[in-house]
Amino acid sequence: MKKAIKLFLFSLTGFVLLVCLLFGKRDKSPDDLRAKYAPAPSAFVQVEGMNVHYRDEGPPLDSLPIVLLHGTGSSLHTFNDWTAALKKDKRVVSMDLPAYGLTGPFPDRNYSVDHYVRFLEEFLASRGIQRCVLGGNSFGGLIAWRFTLKRPAMVDKLILIDAAGYPKESTSEPIAFKMARIPVLNKILTFITPRFVVKSSIQNVYADQSKISEALIDRYFDLTLRSGNRQAFVDRIKVAYDSSYLAQIQHIQQPTLVLWGAQDALIPMASAYRFHDDLPNDTLVILKNSGHVPMEESPGESLKAVLSFIQN
Image (tube, rainbow, N blue to C red; front, side):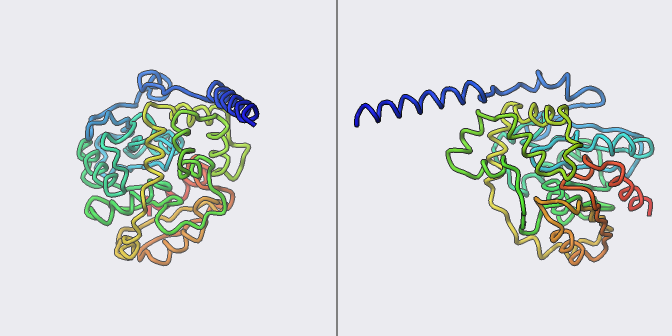
């Protein structure tokens, strides 16, 4: 019996070592990632003790810029195609939110939505932005509408792209999200992060798998490995959601575009219709062939709806 136990422990140790050898990944420093993911016009600004990665493009004197917020596990790069088109006529500002991209974690590890709203206030002040068109995808959408409730005078129009907020009724969820909620396993996730986990998570939020390139997977994977981001991802996922603000959505008076991928399995269309029912001044646009990140998966079609909304 003792021999069997020893053999089991030996085999288990060998398995763990093999997994660490194959999938254990060291953190990457921001300096190592900047050359590839922060070329001009990328810049950095100090906010709350963080060196925040951002881009400020288009006509600098545009008094009503478009500010774009990405979702969980993503980065400002998710808006690359939109920005390339919009910056011809509009000032477009995007940033890597704390916990993600090149910005990295909040120093105090406080990932409440209230803290993100305060961060956005300080970031906009650093860029001299007093009023804007504010858009956000997924978690970024949640920050956007919560910011609008707190600072309505700063938001001229609101764009909610598959936005979080209402209780989710996910039909499918990225594996990384599930792992981040499981004790012990979420600890392992902070230093053992197989590339296939990142790939699977991207596949989960895309409707058309053929649009997922190796370069896209590399970007998400590399920025996941940015020092501190894996622990921050777990910390953010573990934050309890405050649903008390849902009753206030009906008080948002700004013209709002509710833009949704019909094939979004993470935040299905039920949430789109709830926003549509609760917002007093909104336009609902459903994109039939898109998933959770239409600005990245279907940039042309989704941008068409945004341009129509902004111009009108």
